Image (cartoon, rainbow, N blue to C red; front, side):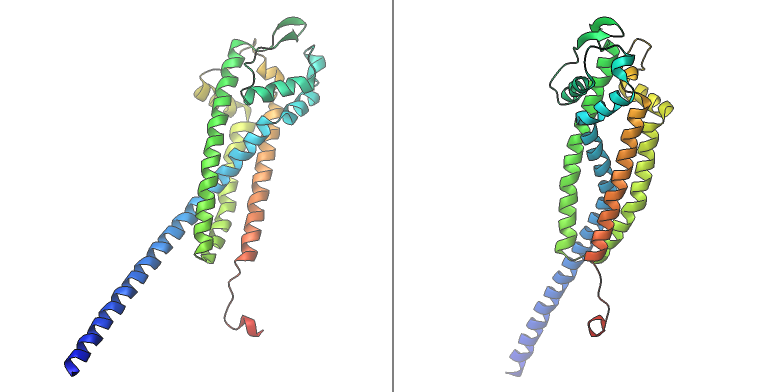
Length: 250
């Protein structure tokens, strides 16, 4: 009788020990996945914001209208097409609705506004935008999955560290982005390296889209990205307050 009790106790101890081991391994797996999710969020979130905001700005006609109005394009280039219509034409091209065949008066001459070089550069740029849009969608899905991983497992500390780490990482990404887009010599070298073409005096794009256009896009992307990251940091900081001992008694 005593022997059978000892046997049962040993069996129970073994079962409890195995269960505890499984719980410990599950906790370790959750911790590793949570930390990995935090690292992915810190790296991906700034890239997603920069890519998404750039796509929105380049695809809407308002940016082009503002640029053409500020540069007084209609008068300077002696064009028969209005600023709004030309802006819509650019936007439609990015949306794959036209093929850059725009015959109108340009600099007093009736011709296609866009040269072969213009079409080459804009076609390559549109392809790059399409790729970045697909990448932004994939990054958004990853961000949602990683965020759910942290929220579901109540990883408040990792969420706080991740949101804090996003700020300096975003600053670094934004600084690089502004240098690539707003600084003309670097942008020209990047264009030559990626698109294998450098604008000539006959091309129209440098006349239509001046340096101010790229600087404005870079400024909006930089400011908007930083504001969104700071907002996310503030939101997470408030939602993940860790209660200390005796807080409820105060």
